[in-house]
Amino acid sequence: MNWLIKSSIGRKFVQSISGLFMILFLLFHVSMNLVLIFNYETYDFLANEVLGANWWAIVGTGVIALGFVVHTIYAIWLTLQNRKARGKDRYASSSKTDTTWSSQNMFVLGLFILLFLLLHLYQFWYEMQFKELLMIEGARHDSATLVKEVFSQVWVVIVYIAAFVALWFHLTHGFWSALHTVGWNNTIWMKRIKVLGNVVSTAICLGFIVVALAMHFGFSNLVG
Ligand code: HEM
Image 1: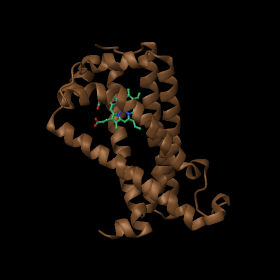
Image 2: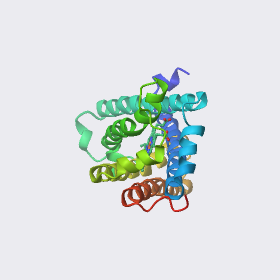
Image 3: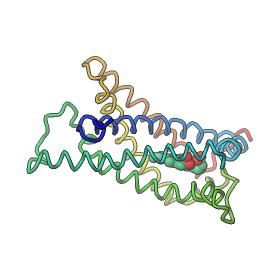
Image 4: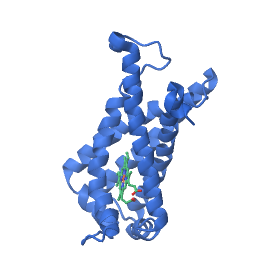
C-alpha cells in the first residue's frame, strides 16, 4: 500500500481512480437532475426520501467527500512534483503524448471547479442536508423549488455554465489520462478512449446545462 503514497506512478494511480469515481458520481448526479425537467414530485421524492438524511446517504456523502479530498490533495502533490522535476523548463513544450490546452491547464480548471463546488454546496447541500443533520431550523425539503429559486437568478446561470465548460475541459482530458494511467494505453484503444471520454464529458456537461437553462426559463415540470 506504501507505493500509493511513495511512488509517483502510485500517486498518479490514486489520482486516476478518484477521478474515475467522481465521473461515476457526476453521471448519477446529472441523471438525477434531469428528472427535474420532467417531474418535480419525483425529484423531491428521490432527494428527500431516497437520498435525504438517511444513514446510507450520509455514508454516500462521506465517500464522495473523501473522493474529492483525495483527488484535490493528490492534484496539488502531483503538480508540485511535476514542477520540481521540470524546473526552469516548466513552460517548455513537453514530450507527453497529449499536450492539448486541457492537459496543460488541469490544475487551474480543477481549482475553478473546486471554487464552484464551494458555492454549489452552500446553495444546496447546506440548505437541504447539513441543516437537517444538525437540526438547524429551516432545512429545505422542497428540493425542486429550491433549485428553481436558485436558478431564477441570472448570475447563477452564468457562473454555473462557466463551471460546466471548465468541467468539460477537465473531464475530456481527465477521462483519457486516467484510463491511460491504469493501463489502457495501446494506440488503438487510446483513440477510442479519447472519443468515449468526449462523449461521456459532453453528456454530463450538456445535461447540466440543459437543466440549468430549463430551470431558469421554466421549461420544466412537463409531466407533474
Ligand atoms: C445544473 C447543475 C446542478 C444542479 C441543479 C445540482 C443540484 C444539486 C442539489 C439539489 C444537491 C443537493 C441534494 C442532492 O444531494 O441531490 C446537490 C449536491 C451536490 N452536487 Fe450538485 N448540482 C449540479 C451540478 C453539480 C456539479 C457540476 C457538481 C460537481 C462538479 C456537483 C456536485 C455536487 C456534490 C458533490 C453534491 C453533494 C452530494 C452529497 O450530498 O452527497 N453538482 N447538487
